[in-house]
Amino acid sequence: MAEAVAERVRHYILDGSDEDLRRLLSISEVSAEMARAAFRRVGVQDGWKAIECGCGPIGGLAVMAEMVGPAGRVVGVDFNESAVQRARAVVSALELGNVEVVAGDLHELELAALGGPFDLAYTRLFLMHQADLAATLRQIAGILRPGGWLVSQEPLRSPAPRSHPHLEDLTDFWDLVYELLERSGIPGGAVEDLPRFVREAGFEVAGMSGYFMMLDPKVGFEIHAGTLAAARERAIKSGIVAERIDELVRDIRAAKGGSYEWVSSPFFLDLTLRKPGPA
Image (cartoon, rainbow, N blue to C red; front, side, top):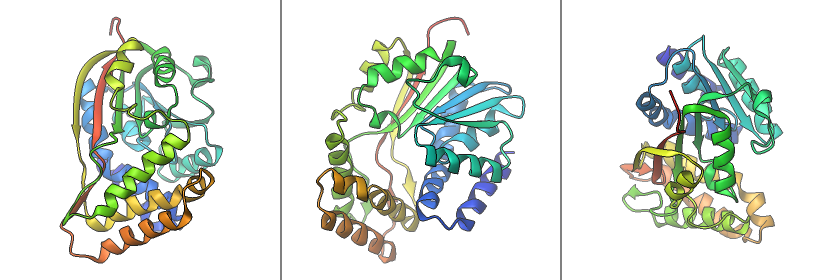
């Protein structure tokens, strides 16, 4: 089943005409094994109920659907109605019959409306956008069963994405991403402090690691440039000069044609967390 789902994701990326959707699906594909390995560590079983917080147009839904099996159930939640509509279209195209996508703010949705409690919750590139991490983590704890799991994979502020040979534009790109987050009211260093926040929310830290994902240069540079391009309007509204954004997007995309051996993702903090209680 894993190979079939992965092949459907690749096919959908190649067939898509929406540039930002292709970028987000590419992120989903290159990070699929990172998610799969984390789910194996917590012992995901057929029939589990799982939820992804901030799923965007696909996130980890395909991997979760694969691992809980046809008897399981996966719910994706995103507050962006446009992202939810895209996610539903992707779920339909990938024939993920055990997946449902819900529109709404995770902090305001009732457990019954989501169909919980859940055995597993997952966040990737989600907690880094939360203004009150403690409140968000308490909300996630509330939708998990006692003994349930939270897998959280979030990028650190430093180190920035890297490449060989070195491309300084990647550091500038990552600095700009975090500048935009801070202008939007997100406290700096929140991901670095995640272990403290999760303990305050009542989780036990069962495992903690971190790593870069190594990417093919053409894929990696396009993901980074596309991320910045997707945030362009929001960044300009926050006061960041358009020329600064456009120059970085142009230079990073130009690197796809250079003699680079590899490019990396940002450095991810990978947390395996358990809600206390009987399994």
